[in-house]
Length: 250
Ligand code: IPE
Ligand code: IPE
Ligand code: MG
Image (cartoon, rainbow, N blue to C red; front, side):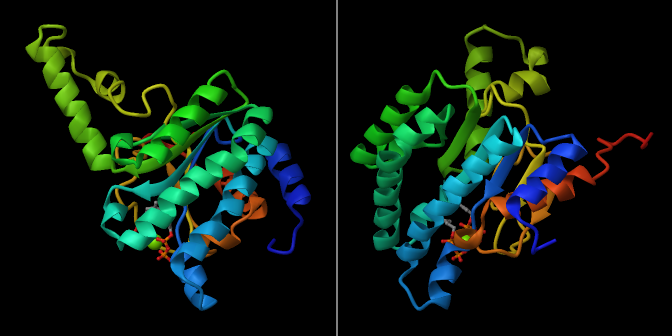
């Protein structure tokens, strides 16, 4: 399969049917990609930008509705200051370079996370691209920046507690739907498929609530080498899964 052309794989997965509505990706391995080439880590991050372009285009071609990309975690703030500032600059540069193209492709860009921690120029760029693309509906692109799932869950609990304290809802009205409505992903379906690149087999605080019944796919490919063909291979694998949701297969 690894020698198949992207177009052949796309053909195959369209014939198969069942395209995942929502694909989430933990984009990992930029540092190792750079180290293998004896380059500084930020060059690995820079090289990863073209993979973002590839998977956005691939998702549109395949007919995916929502693409969620984990770009920067809350824990990533603890990396060396030089790497953090390089990542913030790259975020700005990505938006600068790609906003018009994303808009032309019909992509609605949403940035999810504790955005108040971003540098003012990065926050301004984020705000600009969200406003520019808000009217689009071909693909929704969720970029998770300064995001941690536990913090998102704690925030949801706090918002519900405030609603109860203010008398807007009663405690027994808190159910799955009420909880999900307080998450950053409130208006999105749960991911059908979660891909993690670079071979790591962990969730690293990404979408803990939302991946309850998501199919997982671990790719050995480092993020800067990940292209649309790899995305299609993951979707083809997903199409052969038997999703039971705790029930008995029919
Ligand atoms: C993913 O690549 C990008 C971010 C987490 C920002 P890494 O920087 O984690 O790369 P590795 O895991 O060190 O190879
Ligand atoms: C997860 O990758 C976060 C992102 C891809 C943005 P990390 O590289 O930060 O995760 P760990 O440290 O390997 O768990
Ligand atoms: Mg990593």
